[in-house]
Image (cartoon, rainbow, N blue to C red; front, side, top):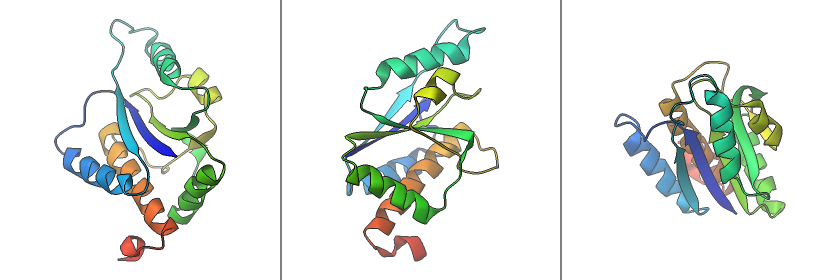
Length: 153
């Protein structure tokens, strides 16, 4: 299984970039992992969310397992996330895509396409920080699945 971490917006900002790179390298020890930063469509002021949705859907493969991060999604603790990822591997999912939407959220078409909608928290975080939290939590889940010490250091 491959893990793809997608985010709509600009490149990683300096204050999160080293952490994102570090946790991404750690995840790679378990699964091939990649980031896909999807630029905000230009000249789409009135239809921004819709245009972002079209761009996202055009890059998804039909057998991708899409996890949309959305405040209305289901919350999981770290052990539940670990079991969730392990189950996708057991189901022979080729690629699991964790998607962070743009500043105004995700288009309904993307939410309908999603196989699972996940909320990190009831709190609202800046998109750049969500990237760091996402890759740290995926790494934590991988370490739980391997019964490694990171989870309870």
